[in-house]
Amino acid sequence: MNDMSNPTSWQKASLIGAELQSAEQTSAGVPTSVGMLSIKSANRTLTEASMTANPKQLYGEFWFEHEIGCLFADSNVGKSILAIQIAEDIAKTGEIVLYFDFELSEKQFQLRFTDEQGNLHHFPSTLYRVQPDMNLIASIDEPFEDALMRNIENVAVETKARILIIDNISILCMQMEKGEDSAALVQRLRTLKNKYGFSILIIAHTPKRNMSMPITQNDLAGSKKLFNFIDSCFAIGLSAQSGNMRYVKQVKVRNCEMRYGGDNVMVCHIEKVGTMVQFINMGTAPEHDHLRMVNREEQVQEARLLSASGLSLRDIASRMGVSKSTVNRMLREVSGVPDGQTGQVGQTGQDGLSQVSQPSHLSNGTAGGNAITCKTNDDGTA
Image 1 (tube, rainbow, N blue to C red):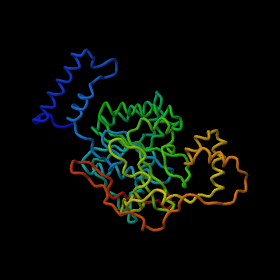
Image 2 (cartoon, one colour; image 1 turned 90 degrees about the vertical axis):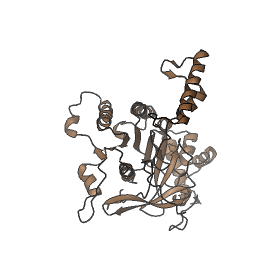
Image 3 (cartoon, helix red, strand yellow; image 1 turned 60 degrees about the vertical axis):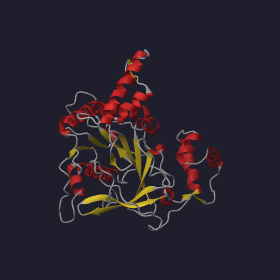
Image 4 (cartoon, helix red, strand yellow; image 1 turned 30 degrees about the horizontal axis):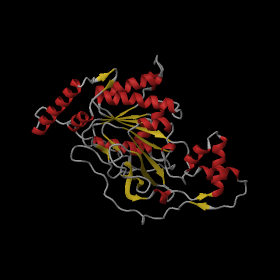
């Protein structure tokens, strides 16, 4: 919020205006609240909101202060590496950041951030890693998810942290594919956000996806209801151009225009720079440059598998990014369809990339998404 301890002339005028608008509402006989619902005139809403600070960027245009953001991708694409990199960038500004790590053991975490000479990476002192104590889990006398959510709240309050990154959300909701369960979880996180002013980034997964298709909200597990309750959402795609190339795509935004949509995704290389595995920003390019070529027979097979799983024509069309009539034709085709290629093949090299400056730390203490670096392990995972 803006500092109101020594208000400016403009702030004083705004305060007077808000009081007058509140008085008008009262004189008109309109209540200020009914049950859990707050009622304000549109003008009073604008006046009071204008006296608060605009939300800061925490990771460029992808995630803003006071948002529940979601980062999702397939397994071994680099979700955790990008997440810890975002956490480090924010912590460098002096913010206390809690990184709830439900993925890696302490040894796995250490090996990821150690160079060949055994040198350890040095993180900002305000970045704290939080993980479950397996010796205490057996003594929990309430549902695991309830206990964990309560502990997350208590840790954040006691450390005075306002930035929470949860890697990954599956531990809080064992049935993420069920929209009702995932939506209920995000509602609980939203309650925490509103109560304390938290900024929360949840890491989620996507079921195995077709690399020839653009990333959409349908690729997010539990997306049909989960997607409605989050403020921002972005995803990591595996590029068909090379093994260590990724792209980052915005799927949902609320606080700005969509900058990194399908026609302008952020292209990155996963590398290890010194002791830090990172995403290196290489510029931008259309998403279709990084999609795998499509074989017609493979499309037909995918449509049949999705149909056999019980999906409707509409759902299959949405999942595959084609029309319902196209799905209908594919389901009617017999085996032995001649190979035919559709879609676009990616350009090799980086000639198609438009070089852009990387998001940087802002002067107001926020972190952008500058030089995101990341590297795959020897087994090809990120």
